[in-house]
Image (cartoon, rainbow, N blue to C red; front, top):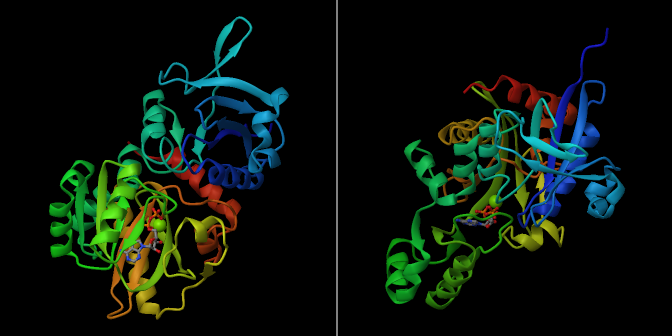
Length: 358
Ligand SMILES: Nc1ncnc2c1ncn2[C@@H]1O[C@H](COP(=O)(O)OP(=O)(O)O)[C@@H](O)[C@H]1O
Ligand SMILES: [Mg+2]
């Protein structure tokens, strides 16, 4: 008798500005999951937040045309009731629950990577890949992530917080930031991704503008001293036992890895492994694991750092609990560099989801 295949529900799209990036990552996940081991359910979430089971070609997920492939779409809703196991599908005769053994949310940004969909999975008592509610929420919020890193003793750039309402008294807010950080500094919405809403300020005038831009995206703002150095990233994997992969470097053309360089110009280069002394790489790996534990991470994360030019100090920048996840994304390539293939990685993530402790 053949062993029963594990039913894996791959969730893609979502309501965030990173909808398209998620679809490309998810298509890669679906293509590389071992079909001998898993039965795959493809769950697409539109930008408006409608949920569909999609039975058409995976290629159409990557190029976005799945939403027009009406014959292969069946509308479903997410249910928080443990009785429904997460998903309800409307059929003749009423609602039926559609059971998956494990959910794999390949979602970035708001409602996907921020603990909200993880909360739904928790309520429904279903297993899922990746970080839980708290870690996802902390990883997504740069302010609270910084607080967690600080209490774990991880070095980071000097930073201050600000709130949107303070901008009503902009001169006072700027005085406070200037006295603590000076220029240049980076202004970020606390909930950001893909560099959206982030700018570099060089003087009072550009700081005022940067604060106004960031405040369009979030009520909470973070301002940091600008670090002169190299940007490096490290992938981590595990629950209680966490391992770190190789360290990679992102070399951006402008020194600011912004939205254009991430998705449009293709001018940023990935260098794997990073061209850094072995002891610096070891420190990056060690701090990546510490950062993951500081937010109570589970499953996976990509942890991003600066290596400061003046003294080679390794400063944490941020943690991404669902990093770009195609087979050629930094996350997977850093594992590839230490001999873990992309399909192995998927197997391990599913195994970690099945074993997760409460
Ligand atoms: N404190 C800083 N010093 C120097 N460069 C920074 C700093 N903060 C951000 N950057 C630049 O801005 C980019 C985006 O910032 P980041 O905090 O990583 O936001 P996102 O979550 O959008 O990736 C970084 O990859 C880096 O190039
Ligand atoms: Mg980043």
